[in-house]
Length: 464
Ligand code: DOR
Image (cartoon, rainbow, N blue to C red; front, side, top):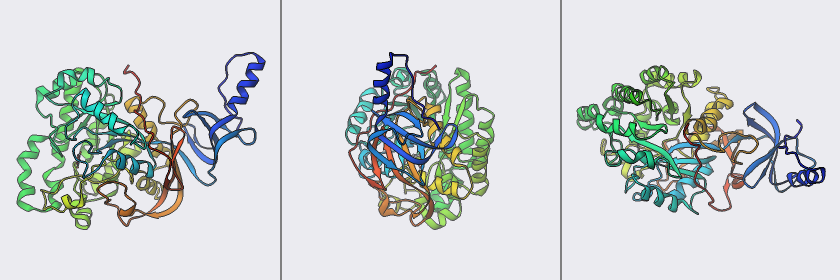
C-alpha cells in the first residue's frame, strides 16, 4: 500500500522539508498485521509525538529512533477498559493506582476508567483532583475517573461531569461494595436531570436485594449468590432506569449486563442505551465456577448459568453489546476467605481481559475485528473519547500488540494487582499481549514492563 501522509499546500521547498521531517518517526512499527477500521491489513505504522503520523509500506525510506519488527504479530488499537476499581484512596491493601495500571499494561490495556467507590467516595471536584494527582507519575496507562452520583451531589452533577479527567457519572442502584447507593426514585430523577453525558449504571434493585438477603444468610452457600441476586433483581433495575431516563431523554450505559432477560429488554432500547458485558460473565459459569472457586467467583451482578451466558454471546453477535469492560474489583484472598456472604464480591480482571478474550477469538466465539470493536472502538464511541479507539492518522499511538498463537497459562504470580490472584489461575489460553504502547511510549516490551509510568488523563469530546 502507498504510504498515507497528511498533505498541506506549501511551496515546493517547504514541502520537501516537510516530507523529510515526516519521514522520520519516533517509533516505527513494521511487519505486523494491523487491525484498522478497514479490517486486518499488512501495514507499517509511524508515530511521532505520541500520535500516528503515517500508515503504509514505510520501509525503505523512513528512519526512526526506535523500530519494532513485529513479524507474525497483530497490532490492535489500544484496549480501553472502561470499568476498573483501583481502590485508591482508602483501600490500598486491595489495590492501588500504580499496581492496577501496571496490571493493565501487562495485560495489553492502554486506558482505564476508574470507579468512585473508594474511601472517600469520589463525589466532588476535590475527590476527582486527588485521584488525578495520585495518578500523575504513577499511572502506567491513560486514565479517567468516574464521579459517583448520589443524593449528596445530584444537583451539581452537570458541572462535575464536565471536569477534565472525569469519565462521567456512575450510579449504583443496588449496593455492591462500599457506601455508594442511589435507589430512591426522586434521587435517580435528580441525577438523570442534572447532566448530559451518558450515565453509567450498576443495575440491581436494592429493595429486592434486601428482601432476599435471607437466602444468602440462611444458606451460607456461595452457590446461592445468583439465587439471592436473581434475574428479576437485575431486570427490574434495568427497566426502571431506562423508564426514568426516557422521561428526560438521558442516555445510559448499563454496566455488566448478566441476564438473557435484560439483553432482550435492552435490545429494544438501543436508541438510548449502550451495553457492557464482562469477560467473567462470558467465561465462567454457574454452578461449576462456585464449586471450583467458591467465593473467588462471587461477583455482583453474579456469574449465572449457561442460558444467560449463551444470551450474552448472542447479544455480542447481534450487536447489542457495545463494550467489554473487566469490572476489575480486587479483594484480598484473606477477605475472600470469609464465610459467605461476609466474603466481599469482586475479582481481579484488568490484566486478564485481553488474554481471556483472545482465547475466545481462538476458540471461534468472536472475530478479532469484533473484539477490537468491543474493546477499543466501542468504548471510544460510547464515551466520546478524543484521539482513542482506532488505528488511523492523527489518533493517539496506543497499541496492544498481540501474538494470536502464543500459548500461555494465566498464573497468580503474573498478576500485578496488590490482591495478587485471578479466578483464571492455571487456565491455559491461546493469544497473549506481547508489547503495549501508550502514546508512542513502549511500556511493555516482550511481556516485560519498561520505561516509566507516563499515563495522562483521557480527553473527552463535548457532548453534542
Ligand atoms: O462484585 C462487585 N464488586 N461488583 C461491583 O460492581 C463492585 C465491586 C467492588 O467494588 O468490589
